[in-house]
Structures are given as structure tokens and as C-alpha cells.
Length: 444
Image (cartoon, rainbow, N blue to C red):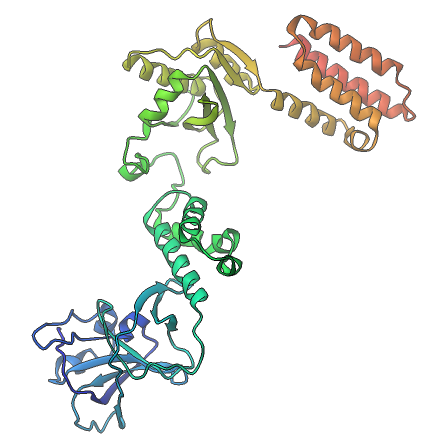
């Protein structure tokens, strides 16, 4: 139903409805007799006053009341007394047009801002009337009985913008927060009052999750088109392989621009992470390259296992894509961790001219894990001589290849000459040396 305006300001109450949202309760019909106002909001259509509105010839206003009533009233523009709804209310309307703005509350509800005053159900007896499109109609008076807080309004509006972007864009929540705070150019006082990202993150994450489809429970799922492109609208899903012999599903992601960088990079780093992978996949494999001195992740792959076939499928797909573009995938160096399946895949797929090297971080991490496993961790943390010997062992990997065995023998000699007060520590140190000799000297 459309509502038309009247020029009369004396109003009669003819119905009340509790707890209606602000945007529905703070809007009225258009101010021009020749203009038909927008249709009733879904809120009003579903409430108990719908039939009364349909069957009355009165013109209708909708305004919020002060919080002590905790309700809104629908006001008729006629001067007739309605026996069922109480006394009439007369409004003193201001002539000046204030600055009208809209934002959102922390719960995502509409928040009306008029001259830096926020309007909702609070202890203030000033009300504002707007059209359904948020155009100002009038106010009962302009002087509030409390101070406005411009800084608070700026922050509320900024948070509203952040929330709106989180609903519409799929980029990182952190990036959205940082971009908007930077663009807002807040004063020092406003920055002090602006909530930190970690304070907003839970509500922003809930907002984002409410708009995303639920994660699938198995590997049999379709990928909507909007998740196969990047934020620039370019193709991002490179390959979707399923029901292979050694793996059930493999998804490879890389845009055309990232692939160009990948094929030009002399160094490639391949690493898998298990914590970042969705529950139905085993790991997220990342291929990182150097471009203009910067390390950039150029390709992502979701894999449901750690088999050599899965790693080979990733590299083979990239080789085929390079061939299709008239180039080759032939980096000078490929660095990986020491996972057996990945080592075999690199050896099988990359040409002989590519040198495969192990990651020093993963090398040290493996040694430290063994230190913890055999019970040497406490001595490593508390005794300088034990820690020094362990670090010498870690540093062997930095020696030239033809000097590695000599370096290992020198560390063994240092251990023999060291006088440990606790014989148990001496035994554990020798266990660590045997592990290193077997896993790193003999096997690699």
C-alpha cells in the first residue's frame, strides 16, 4: 500500500506496536501531495496494524518514541479522536533541515544520525521523521538535553562501512579494516577510541560466515563460479582433478598474472601447511617465487594426501600450462622441506638443470624435534655447552658439500672431548649424533 502526505501536523494515535527496527519506525510518507511514497516495509506488512492501515483513509506517520515507552506509535494525520488509542499528540516541528546520515549499530541494525546525534530508543524526547528513503521531513525540536559526540559518530560510521564491505567483498577482513582506518584519516582522539581489529574480529567473522555457504563435509562438492575467480574477476581456479588413483580431489589455484611470474622465477619454494587446509583436505601446498626481490605466493593447491602422485600432478599441471603459453617451467633452484613424497616428485618432474635444495629452517626444526623426542630439551635450554654442540650440528648444513663429512667428524670429536657432569646427557648427545648421521649424512 502507498501512503500519501498531508500538510497537517496535529496527529492522532490509532495503534501501537512494540520493538520495531529503527528504519521502519523513523520514516513517513513523502512530503509532496503529488508524490506517492514507497510501499510499506515488510516489517509493517507483517505486523498487526496492517489491516487498520489498509482500511483507513487517514494519512499515516510512523515515528519513534522515547525509550521509557519502549515502543513506537503509528500516528494519523487527521484530527479525529480514536477511542481505542488514547489522546492525540501535537508536534512542534523545526523549519531548518539538519544533516541526516545512516549507519549501523553493533548488531547490524539501522542507526540514524542527525547533527552528530544518534537516534534510537534512548532517554531523549526528540524524534525525527524521514521518508522510507531516508530523506528528512521534520523534527519536533532541534535542541537536545545532552551533548553530541562527533568522534563517536565518526567511529560508528567507520565501523558501519567496514561491516558493509565485509558483507559484500571476499577479501581478508584484516585488509578491509586496515584500508578503511587508513582512508578515514582519523584524529589522534578518534584513533584512541577506535576499536582494535582483534576487538572487532569476532563480530566481523560471524558476519562473513553468515553470508558464506557452509563448508562441505566431503570431497564431492561443486565450486560456484564466484569462488573460481579472484577479486579482479579473473580466472583463479586453474585445475580441478578428482577420483585419481592415489588421491580423490586436487584443486590448483593461480591467476594468469601469477603464472607469468612463476614461469619467470629462478627460485621456487614449495611447502605444504596442514593447519590452513579445510577439514576435508589434508594440506594446502603453496609455491612461492621471487619477483623483483619480493617473495610472492604464486600458486595454491588443496590436496587430500601426501602422496607423490599428488605433488607430481601439481607440477605437471604447471608444466602443461607453461607449454600452452609457449614457455617452459625450468627454475634454477627448487627448495622444499624433506618430505619423501615431495622430494621424489621434484626429482621426477623438473629437468636435470634444476637444482633441488632442502630448506634450512625445516632441517633445524627436525633436529630440534629429535632433541625434544629423546629427552634432551631441558639440557638444551639450561646448559650452554649442550646448546652449543646442538647448534654446531645444525650448522653443518651450511658447509660446502665436500666439507660436510669433515664438519660432522669435527663435531663428534668436540662431543668426545666435552666433560658432561651428567652421564645421561652424554648418552643422549650420542643418540642425537647417531640420528643425524643416519638421517642427514647417510640418507641425503
